[in-house]
Length: 254
Image (cartoon, rainbow, N blue to C red; front, side):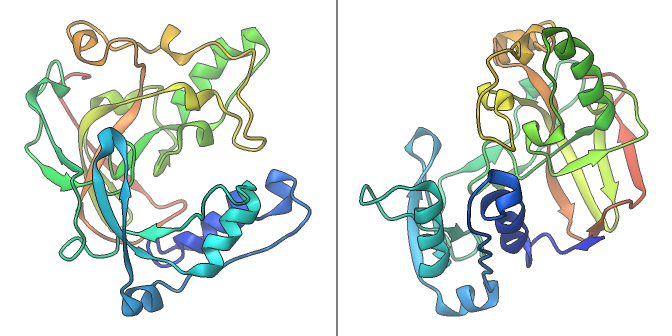
């Protein structure tokens, strides 16, 4: 299966997570498609505020998708929701500049980089080994619960590698795209939310019991557990499910 991560993201997002009644048990089966070329041509820019009140602009994706979010999330007259797209970093203003820091890793030199992360929580891309989820489930199942990769909202899930292999990754090449890793991904309580029902699990123990940062890294990340690795793209390209993956490793984890 082939996906262009830019052009069909909104249709994929709508079908899989928002409007498909089989996923979130809505009575309708409404699918909204957004033509990004038309959005860019129209050029209507809106400004949003994100973490730490940082301002970031985006192209407004139109009334239809905005109304669909209003209806699905049942906001009523509280406010009107809009979907915006960070489609041109040279035009759009953002205060969300990510700069790598030497303290991000404990045992290795951190690549020097700076990027605009737009609307993501921490990084533009995040990946992990599928066996990391399987290993975590060995602990969680003792509490009568389990998770899957969707709980962690990854860009890439890579099979055939040991659990937590991502702690040692430096570079990743998947399909035609190439990424550089620069920071462990810290996690919040949202990893305990069921991606199908949207409900927080009352049984699931916090991931921090099993994945707190080691050694001096704990001084930086504290009680935020680490799961996955944050990445930035160094060579854009097409990625398909089942593509081979090449990994360059650091001398040591973290």
